[in-house]
Image (tube, rainbow, N blue to C red; front, side):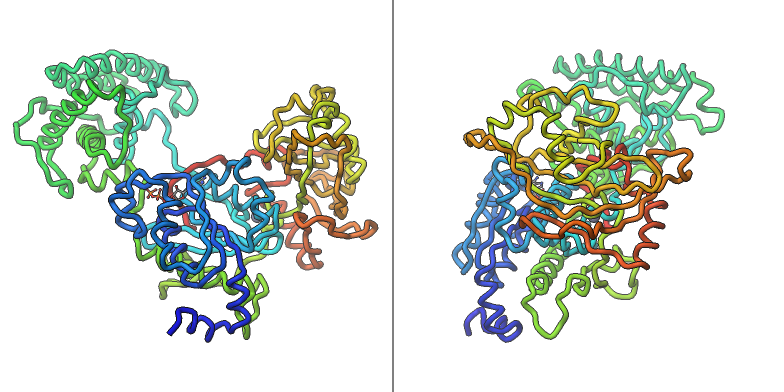
Length: 625
Ligand SMILES: Nc1ncnc2c1ncn2[C@@H]1O[C@H](COP(=O)(O)OP(=O)(O)OP(=O)(O)O)[C@@H](O)[C@H]1O
Ligand SMILES: [Zn+2]
């Protein structure tokens, strides 16, 4: 029986033929990406382009089944394609590159695909692909896993929730004083051992000093001690670099006895806390433990600390520096033992090296089965996203997303929940209340046109009020607003614009009841070889919303602005280019809830400052709620 027989039974010949003519983009060839590549080619999707910037690591092999030991250090995308090529009916194209590289992947390149799949592991890349899909109007299937939890979220630009419609958690940070003076949880000791101690002793980046920011204390004695301790570590680093193994006992004493005694002298800290106890064991028993799954005694941690510090010191004779890597056992053991010794001093229970590996690597173990389930759901739901399944409504808001039980508060008594997609958040700065288009700048235009000329052309063409602002959203820099016109006289060539720069034009009129023009984002395409001197601005429908000051027309506050959306019917609504995203017209009920959400929102209030300060996180941990 041919492979496609069952699929044709499910979706019919016509849909199968459409699938054969579909071109898709898969971003990421890691845990989910490898599974998804296999699933997509088992669906006989016509053409699959797969992008991954990375090479294969030993630690990938337990779940990225397209890779073998011999593939270590080879590019993931190319190797994945090689592994499946012989049983693929699909055309496969691999790229070893960062998806955010605008030269390799300009906006128009994204436009060639019918659907985009995110199989990524960090927020920055997810956000970027989400935005490119909003620009091109292409559906995106976003996915992620974390241990036994996982999700898929189909995103239909300008209709359903986008990746940025809900706030994402950013990594937890701790005040310096908690880490350096008053740890109360093992994680504080792990952060101290990994980010501070290991970094200072062995790694390349040497922290030159402690800034006063985020110290978490005003106690001048404590601040002075933290700074002094940092300076003393410079001296300790020299001991480490000396390669003289007899120095290890000095290191142990300095870190776990002398520094703790100094800390004890700051009496203010200990008025409300249990005092730490300096380390009493400074000699090795000569019998370091080996089982990484067990919780070691204090003596065992000291034994292993001494052993592994010697190993790292001898490595420094041939390696200029050593970076912490959870898969480099020496570095993991050092951090683990140092954290456990410190936790003993502060009366915090110790843990095994395996446990500390998870904390230090900021990782929840990746589970191959979860990846397989999520990739399977992703490929299946794409049949509906592509409208290839008959007998069900494939309207975007009828298509399901999927959550595993623990990640979802919707249903707790079954593993998978599949609620339908939510409409876009009207307050999302990525998917709502914004129009997007491409702006082509040729060399003569860059050389001859000033920012002032460009602004004038844009505000008159698109109907912005006199009060507007211009931001380069890639660098988050303000280029113009009503009280910052310093750069207006500059030629465009002086702005370091490149293909992929995105300029945001926003109406800033603050008069009560003013009709504000919807913001526009322009994706710049720079063509240095073109001699075209004329700037072409495409037609866009002009949508407006009403400005309401929260204080009536007496006093206005930039950061707490309530708005009410409506569409300006006086302009002709026509869709000049394919990259245009146009809002749906909200009904009356919708409008009320819009208004409420806008004034209550903490996600991204429609104000300049907040809107552009979305967190730039590069977190490894995917938070599912
Ligand atoms: N900006 C990017 N451009 C292209 N590929 C990316 C980008 N960011 C991340 N990736 C790729 O996305 C994939 C995500 O896969 P996965 O979550 O399994 O992570 P991993 O790096 O393979 O494993 P782990 O992080 O657990 O060691 C990785 O292969 C990574 O290289
Ligand atoms: Zn959104």
